[in-house]
Length: 81
Image (tube, rainbow, N blue to C red; front, side, top):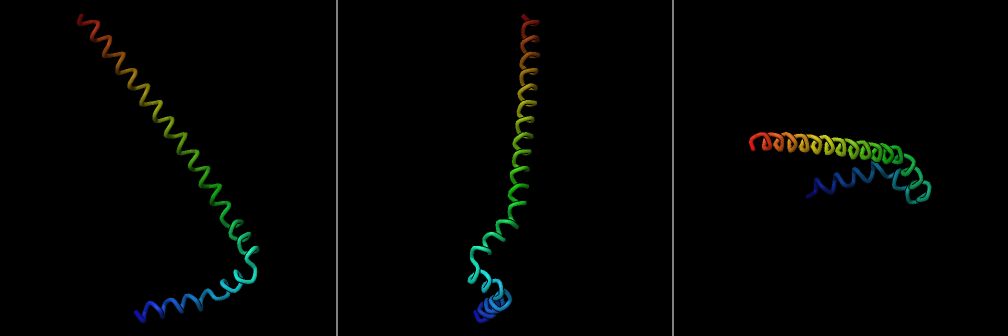
């Protein structure tokens, strides 16, 4: 239990300048965070878009394959009759 508190205080000491900056300039802090994270948001949205397009392509390929299979089965059934 004492080790946990010791680590907690080490973290407080290590990041004390960040805490002071956040407390004194909250607006600037949030603007800085948004500026730093916005490229990651853009990258995430681009990758999500590409994934959605890839899934759509795979679904269309599977649908085309399924229709080909059903056509072949119909032709075979017609030849038997």
